[in-house]
Amino acid sequence: VNIAVDGVFESEVRLSDAADFTAKSLTGDIYVSCDADGAVGHPQAARAAFARLGQRAFYGGIIQNCHHFSAACLRATGRQAQARRGLVDTVGDFVGDFFDLPEEPTFAALKRAARRHLGATKWKLWDWRGEDDEEDAPPPEPDWAAQERFFRQLALTPETAAWILSL
Image 1: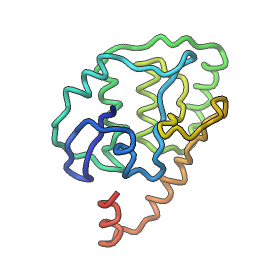
Image 2: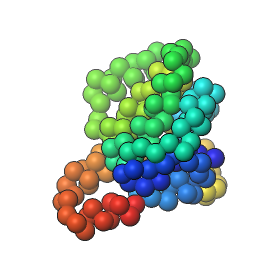
Image 3: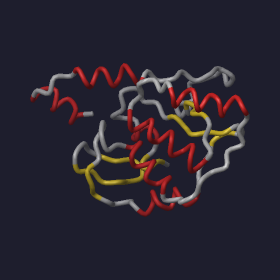
Image 4: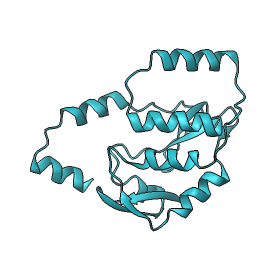
């Protein structure tokens, strides 16, 4: 069960399954925050999400979206995680932050919040459709820069606005 937002401008926070949650997504993918042992989460973050059920607010597919919602729930934990990290992870974070490649901004903010509050060190693609027969295959990283370029170059016309509203 996932927390999802419905609509583009004014939306309601509701419970949703993975298929419903990704129905308006460009890729249909869900990435999960992980550490060296697997998926990470926090009961207080889950409580913060459940406390927002039924809330009506501005949520959109591009600006105030599920990444922003999830990061806010993570901040509700009020804790700083002590991730079990090695020298390679630490150096990798420094280099990654210093030479940060263009990434969809709300997902980048969620990754930072997950690192800070959960100790997440990586993100893995959740095979919620059960299509991946080979468990050892590394998940493909989404091309966030291409998605951002697409939306930056998209002319805002009545037709494209209608298309965005239909997502």
